[in-house]
Length: 182
Image (cartoon, rainbow, N blue to C red; front, side):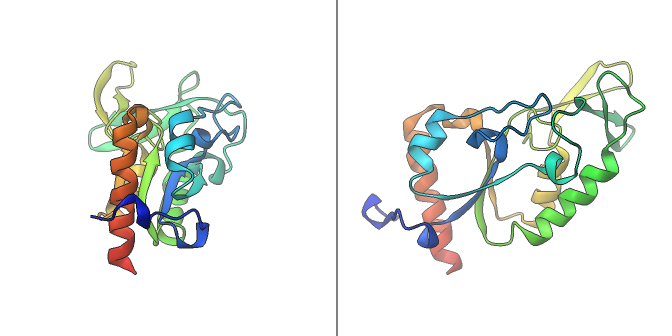
């Protein structure tokens, strides 16, 4: 296991880690806001080359944009508007997620995602039926594509990083994975 003496603040030598752009303070959420995460910025950002991506912005859904939720119909999951279920952004998110995972995630050691997001949630995104009854929790559309294309990537949601020890262990793990792929 690498020790902290092997960590570097030289960006080009750090492990690349994808991150939901809203967690870095970028104003990309559906409401035009962000979900800046102070512990990630203090404990992870100095040691990891964080690559902010917002699949919903990349899909050109706009800022601000109508909120969407995941609707499960049989084995199909759709991304439909919360207030207007005629708004269907499933194809835009699916196509963009595939493109992002093919072109921007190949050299990542890990990915930090926004919990409960219809695109970025990892096991925490509510799946509803057409009557807005929550059925279960699952992955967002981007995270499903990421897991399929890159099953080796460590995926954690931001709620895991409220503990400094978890942050330090995550950095160590990213360096281990980075060294294996060099």
